Image (cartoon, rainbow, N blue to C red; front, side, top):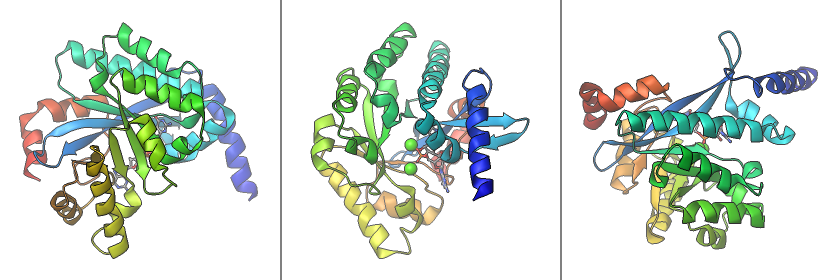
Length: 271
Ligand code: C2E
Ligand code: CA
Ligand code: CA
C-alpha cells in the first residue's frame, strides 16, 4: 500500500515537470487495417511517456492520474499540437496515411472550447476533417454533460468521425449513441482475446458488429493478435482490425515506411 502511494505521488510530481517539457511525451501510431482489402486504413495515435532515460510509464498508469489532477488538459493540448503538426507534414509530403484516431478524455470534452480549439488548430494546418477520428469511451457518454455532447456534436458537424472505444465494457446508452451520431464502434480487447474460446465473448463481439452495421456504423476490433481471431472477425464482417497480429504501435518514421514501402505493405496484405 505504502509503495503504491509513494509511486502515485512520485508520478504526479514527475508529471508536473513533464507537462512543461517538450520532450517527455512522444507519439506512436498503431495501424488499422481494412479487413476486406488488407490495406492500411489509418492508425490510432497512442501517447508514450519517457520519465527518465530509457524508463517508460504506460498510459494505463499515468492517464488516470493526469485526469484526476487536471494535467490531462495540458497533455491533450500537447497531443493535438504534435499530432496535427505530424499530419500536416505528411500531407505536405503527399503521404496517404488515411485517418488518424486520437483518444480524447471526458475531462477535455467537458471544457467549453475543446471543439473550437481543435477545429482552429486543424484549420491553421490545413488538415481535412475526414483525416481525423476522435475516440471516446462509453463512460464519457455516460457523464451526461451537455458540454460533452455539445463538443462532440460540433466535431461531428465539422466532419470529424467519432468512435466509441472499449465498446461493450461500459453501460452504453443507445440514446446517446444516437444523439452524438457516432461513426464507429470499437469492440473492446477483452472480447477479442477470448473470441475463439469463449462462446459469450464471441456472442458479444458478433452482436456489436451486427448492432453497429444496423445503425450504419463501421466496427473496429482492437487487440487482434492471432490469425484465428482475424479469421473469425473477417467472417463476421468486422470492418477494421487493429492489433499485434498486424503491428504494434510504431514511431512516425516506421509508420511512414510501412505506408510507403511496397514490400512491407505486401506483408500486411498477405496476412
Ligand atoms: P486504448 O485506447 O484501448 O488503446 C489500445 C491499447 O491496446 C494500447 O495500449 C495498445 O498498444 C494496446 N494494444 C494494441 N494492440 C494490442 C494487442 O494486439 N494485444 C494487446 N495485449 N494490446 C494491444 P497503450 O498504448 O498502452 O494505451 C493504453 C490506454 O491508454 C489506451 O487504451 C487509452 O485509453 C489510453 N491512452 C493512450 N494514449 C492516449 C492519449 O493520447 N490520450 C488519452 N486520453 N488516453 C490515451
Ligand atoms: Ca483508443
Ligand atoms: Ca480499448
